[in-house]
Image (cartoon, rainbow, N blue to C red):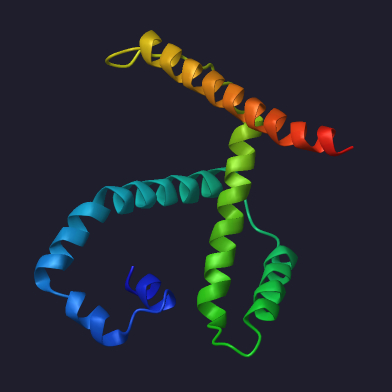
Length: 150
């Protein structure tokens, strides 16, 4: 998150002021569910890959690494870290492809609390139709002087 601030042009001094124990605890509380979910997905895909013998071909990793090197140009490039990340990403894609090919899913629609709000949908439809009508009127009004000039 802090690197995002730096990338967007925020001064390092301002970033350092934001780094406090209180802000860290807030950040940790906000990000914890996402981190836990990502960790579980990572563990599950790693295990599926292991059980199903899914391996990333070396040439696919090399190809991606060449593209990343080209993009980085003369910038910093941690070869080992990037290689591990590329391998992980490619393996995750292969696992998802495997699951897509071998799954038999049925969609089950669950009516959530509150359900479908027909009044809201009607209101949105009416507003949309009104905007279209206004746009058509503006276009017709703009075209009318042009017809008079011709």
